[in-house]
Image (cartoon, rainbow, N blue to C red; front, side):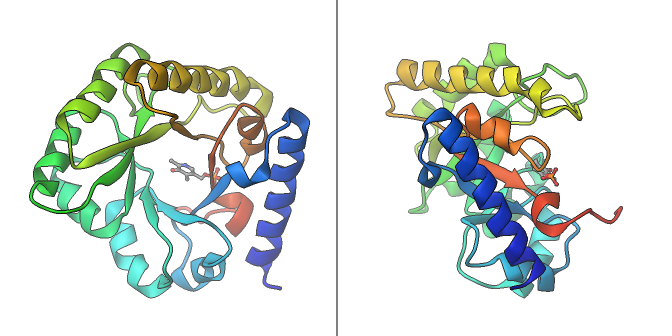
Length: 229
Ligand SMILES: *Cc1c(COP(=O)(O)O)cnc(C)c1O
């Protein structure tokens, strides 16, 4: 077994135990391997063992994806600029970082005429941190309604968030619980069956699973400590 394989098995075990604690099925929780700064030959070891790959920079994914190969979907999890939207659509199957009407409109414009309905997540600035991307909780309803009603080539899949940094995962819990509640309220309001929850990273994914995560985004837990860029 490779190191990455071993780490993935350990992560699955920890997810299962978190699920047992709250009476969820582990089948509901998918692993997105976030491969930023990790060389393609290491990322390749995760193909077939995780449900998707994630990158937070469009350029890095464009360069790496052909080297990694494999048939699994790629998710963009970092902020998206208008001028990178076309490249993002060429490189990713799912965009998790839609956080404003302007970006939704740009993606919709590029998708118009095509057959594809792009699955998207709305990124929520769940801790209301001024330096962070993500739509404010106040503007979430408006943005989601805009996507559902005005962006026929997009499919609103769920919400994504990164809570304020804190080494104690228990301090992330209220933010995960809040996102979970927002997703339930929103699904209700929009009359859609359910919204996915992309939340939890290497230091706090078990707490996120306990609070309802359906996707955990893991970098270091799978690939080890990152090199500085
Ligand atoms: C880097 C990154 C992750 C993974 O972070 P780890 O702490 O290494 O698990 C998850 N989500 C986003 C948006 C990231 O940029």
